[in-house]
Amino acid sequence: MVLAGADNLRRNVDKVNGLNVFPVPDGDTGTNMNLTLTAGCEELKKKPSSHIGKAADALSKGLLMGARGNSGVILSQLFRGFAKYVHDLESVNGQQFAAALQQGVETAYKAVVKPVEGTILTVSKEAAKHAVQFRRSSDVLDLMNEVLGRAKEALAKTPDQLAILKQVGVVDAGGQGLVCVYEGFVTSLSGGLVQVDEDFATMDTNLGEVSLLPGMNLAKEVHAHMPAQAHLATEDIEFGYCTEFMLTIAPGKVKGFTFDEGVFREQLSKLGDSLLVVADEELVKVHIHAEYPGEVMNQAMNYGALSRIKIENMRDQHSHILEDVTHGYEAPVVSPAAAVAVPNKPYGFVAVALGDGITDILSSVGVDVVLSGGQTMNPSTEDIVNAVNSIDADTIYVLPNNSNIILAAQQAVDLVDNKTLIVIPSKSIPQGLAAILAFQEKADAQINTDAMNESLRRVKSGQVTYAVRDTNMDGIDIKQGHFIGIQDGRIVSSQPSLMDACKKLLEEMIDEGSEIVTILTGEDATEEGMEELEIFIQTMYPDMEIELHPGGQPLYAYLFSVE
Image: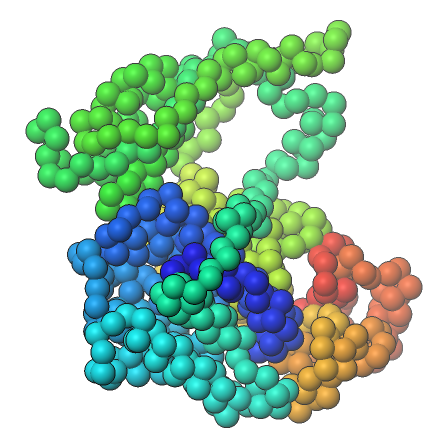
């Protein structure tokens, strides 16, 4: 049923994307929902079970870790609540299925700080409400037929609840995506022909590429001449075996042991370094560099069964790398023992950005990890968790720098162990930069959090991009291919000319109290355009200070901030 729902959504991604006009016409809701549900199906297929509670738990875990964008996060929460209700049930009837749908809706609404009606939330709520009231049959197929019918009715009414939908003449994209999922459910339950494309679950969902910073430029420079590993000596590798496995926790006690994650971490930490332990109720993922992998696995087997075991000899790997080094090049060898140890630091930073220039800027002001992403390519919750876990710091701030990534970042808070994760809800690159510049290393976490949140309100953010379809938003007629100026999420201009759109946007952003305008140039920016903008600002606002930086971002020719 779930695979059929996911396949139907995948086949309709373009249709769902084409409906996406809220909050801006960027067209990624279908993509985000598809990637999220694909991740859930991958996890479900790894743990096939006829026990609906176990199957739902697997689906929920995959959705949670793969959630992308607001629509993806909401979808993951709908099934997270569903999974909680059916957790102990081997099978369900119609009434139980309806109650699980209702708990999913309640969980999703709790996850959204400011729920907006006329969206996927409304469609799911109306469908679940009808399901709970449906009493004519206990059959799940009968119930899902009713659920699908009411979901379609609720979807048709979304333009009456969300003004922008009515202006454009479309239904909500997220709601349409959910209807696609429900259509697949009904097709499968009714025994109809379900052509599930088995390849869909192999899609690359790791769109949020991680760039570790600082030091990236140096690493690139070294790599141009030599592999970085060539600067180390094989004999200095203290723990020679990269060891990975999955531990399935046995219920109750095994050999007198009861699993405690903290105790387990402490036990393994004595057997090597680079330890990573990720645990849920049943599974534990372990990664460790150890000298005696057998000791690690013997310790783990006290708590259950091992699977997916992988052991690699890192000394052999290093030797092979050295053998491939250009003949005759004598690389200086630096022993890790001679290196200065970097202690655990109190604070770390993760930020989301697109563009090499913006990445370099964020690195220069102290960001440890930059995740590649933005409005049309959202890193998942799992990407954010992995980035946070890669930083050796007690408290880590996450700067989403896009409204569509905030929910995924907030969802990561509950998935990080032994660290404090604080999400600063930055909605743009200028806001993110303002927030990190407001950070004071000697201040405590609460003072910094308050200061960074306050900084978001002091900066005006603007961006210029092109419209993907005809529409009318914020009282402005927009034509496909025109350039639109957006200030803090609100469209303020639509012009056939890129320069005219930029100038109109700057006129809206700059007022008597403005002092500095910062411009980040994107891939489509030109030197002539930059000169024209500088002359315009100097002429119209002679007292304004101008800062210009190459951002390299796609889609947005120019990003502006005014302070």
